[in-house]
Image: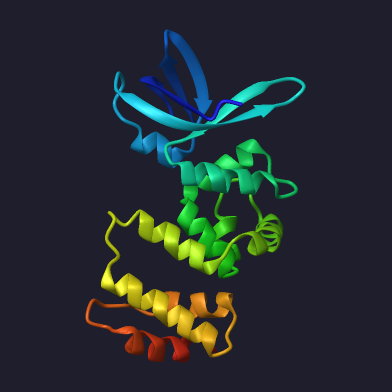
Length: 201
């Protein structure tokens, strides 16, 4: 199994990358988001990869983020989602966005991905919900926040946890807090009060 490749960018298109590693060119299928973030041609980059092996083809799928790769592997376990459909989802949603969409039962957001209809999105949520946790979703998001947890993000997190402690499900709590227009001067209590108004909406 090829876990990652470190090499120089030879060419980039909307959904594929050619990477030169020790004078060998690898064609790697990538998401649209990663294509936009790829360094200029000639520069070095590390791509975290998944090797798809079928009877008629061997294809490499790659990501700039190891987190995206882990979420991609989860997607492949969902019945009806193949390597290219999984890549399509991660072209329109980041790993963080997908986690929060699954945990908040946000079918519409997931269904925006190419080739993913409402039924597939519902199936995806059903199959992945037990494999994701709200705490992990916040932790992963905060890890990427330039190493510093913003106060408003921390207050949001605490408001979600408070709603769960009050008896609401993680999905209900997350949905309610996401509806609140959080400003910098709002503390946890203020976010919680606004969230309680949103729970029934």
